[in-house]
Image (cartoon, rainbow, N blue to C red; front, side):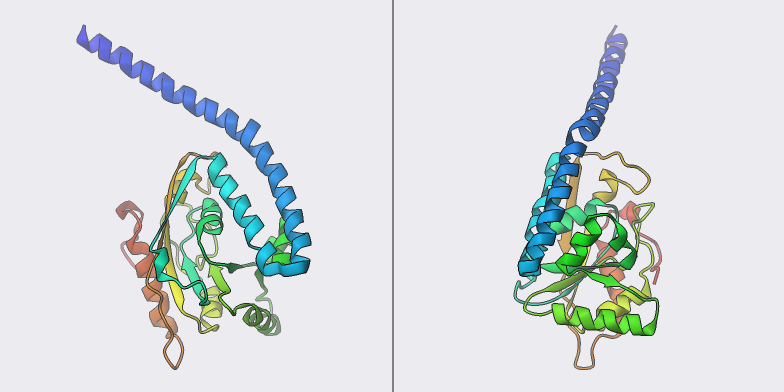
Length: 265
């Protein structure tokens, strides 16, 4: 009799989980998605227009609200650890792992420091969003020719002052497995050429919320862990040393099952 009761309770639990999953999918696509589509269009237009006045303010705070809305509407809790390690008046290069699309929403929404994204030039082609990114002054990396790279660096150096920082995902793309991929040396070297303090950041939990292989989202928790800044010496950063150190530091705060046994760099 007790076995039958336990079996019955198990079936109820499974049915409840399935029902909640179905209800959340309905909510995601029929309620949250339309709201976010309209909000994305509005925020993009506000950002574009406002950036004519002040791209540092309008290119950061409206998108910050937009990013938080993604987290709020999908019940994603974001926790930032060690935020006291950074000074708002200091410019940094933030280096982070890239688990999923919610990395962008969590960082943009909850990192209490104004920054510019370093992004692939191809992202400029996304309708409206690309225009908003360009108006905001985010750094579109054009590495097609040495002249184009030099131009990118010149534009970026003018923007990185008075507490304005740079944020890059040196893996270049989101991971398929949750584990860190190798850092792309080109993007990393561009960041080091600015000769600013480097802050390694570990993003954990984003992969569970929305892996690269699906458009379905699960509520959950993302932890953003800031690590001690790495300051350049009088001769600048040692490229080989810094890229290895950043990789190890970032990976050290990931769950054990998402850590690589060997350094990919």
